[in-house]
Length: 578
Image 1 (spheres, rainbow, N blue to C red):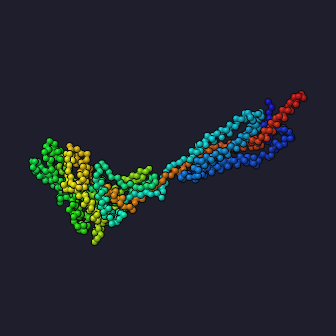
Image 2 (image 1 turned 180 degrees about the vertical axis):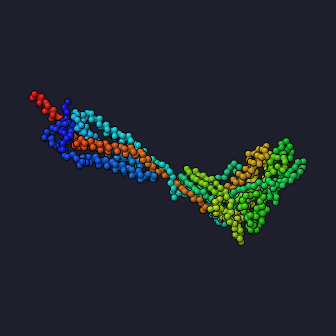
């Protein structure tokens, strides 16, 4: 097979495919003679490919700059719903496309370098060297395969950002009753008196296992948070005063004994009456009964001017042992529960509990998320920081603080704020119930109905045969729960009554932030680096072979085939002459 004849390298002549010093086409082919093959020549010859590589690097730098700019920032809002992924796909496609020309030209030059190593059949250009094209194909296909990986460099993370324009508030009462907001100031006293009474009555109708809902915060965004905040409200405190009871036996006409259980100073009493004609059941014979009384029934008839001059601590005749001296000055209502169990021993049969409803400072934690508000009470504090006695026409008042002493609230002890509730909630002295034996009776009017429901709650979940210990334990817990429910009802009214009292929170709106995962850009960077390294390797090999830079020039192939054809013709002529 004929071989392509190429000239040997010289100072003015490129090296092609053989060691022959005969030009490919004789003297007429001086065009194949190359200039001086120095660094300047190779730089100029490969300048387009080098420029393409620099442009590719520039686009990669632009991609990094764009992604760095948006990293950790909200997702951009562009026209036509274009996203950052669209921009990345566009720039990455340009970046990969720019590597095609350097790859193609380097492979084209590589085939001539391959011929320069030794004599090879010229048809290897379209034969064996065809396998070199797989290099370009693999690099190009790797770019297509890793294109989706480049998109993975962008991820989105939903988080919450503070917004100043949104509403995040929770109702609080700053001063009682001064900060109550009413449309008609002349009706303020009636509004507070009626509202407190109505709230307490309504809460008193709840069962012992029901709770009054706390006022919830307002949030105009998807999420709001509040630091701990404080508000004036109402609390309930109870004390066991059983040891102050005086039990007197009273014989009745049926040959049995009734009992009168009373507290000192006529603060409360229970007239326990044996049910007539019942002898078969011990619990029925000794029924469980209860009475609730309010000791202020006589004092509320005093002239108001005289009542408001009394020192706050002296307005209540308390029997309980309280561990806080500030409870009585802050009290607005007092009641005594006297009830019996099923024990036949009079000395162990009766129990007495003192109840105080008093002003206190509540500490709350609130949150709002996904349309659901949540409020928890973390502390109740009764701490009077400063007492101000009444002077002239001014009512007595005091300043209350929260548990940390860093928030103060004013309380004015005027009549309609401190006494109308007590007047409206006077428990009828005739009220009693023997709930566990199937019968009951109560005093008349709303107060009687209210007291009757409280009586039902006292013995909730108890049976007629319940042991004394169980009755004592559960009745105590029931009294504590239901009286605090009433306090919560009044607190809700008080907090909602101050239209200007607001605990301000922080509102958050949902934001989608861009998060760049830089490791996914290494595939694109690796493709660019491999392209540059491949180009540099071909350039260095070409320079070492002292080859002229031909690359994908079709003229070189034409001259090479022309030289082969000329040699074939000369060989045929010599054969004919021979």
